[in-house]
Length: 160
Image (cartoon, rainbow, N blue to C red):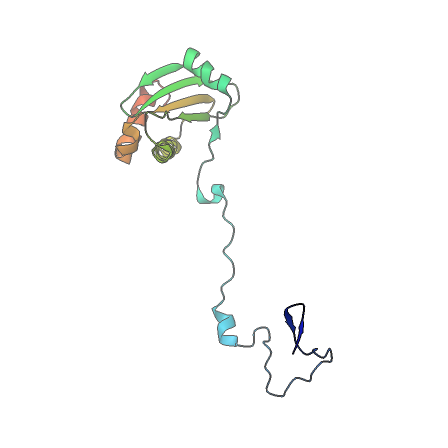
């Protein structure tokens, strides 16, 4: 080996191909048929409609929330406050707010998910804008209690 600029330089490698020996084994597609039989087809795509999950339209604009706060009917419960007002769209739109008083982001998101799932289970008439303001009890209360309370609040508003 020669030293060139402080770096060892080895022997030049030939660019010619060497013949493969007889014992060389290259993998082939589906060579092992037992393994190929174990492969299952990919799962079929499932839509929310096929699973029976109702899609919830959401309120996104600040002006829609303010309109409900000032003009909508409201009712107060232990886990939530509901604001409801008819819209002209023919579909329900839901907005859920959870203040930092509830806790960290994990707790706020948990409260939102629980309230949204309770709303899905109700099956309200269409054409309403709804804002649900989560309270701290929405995080710790049993799911059945939240569901029962939401049903009773909508009943008070004569929406059920």
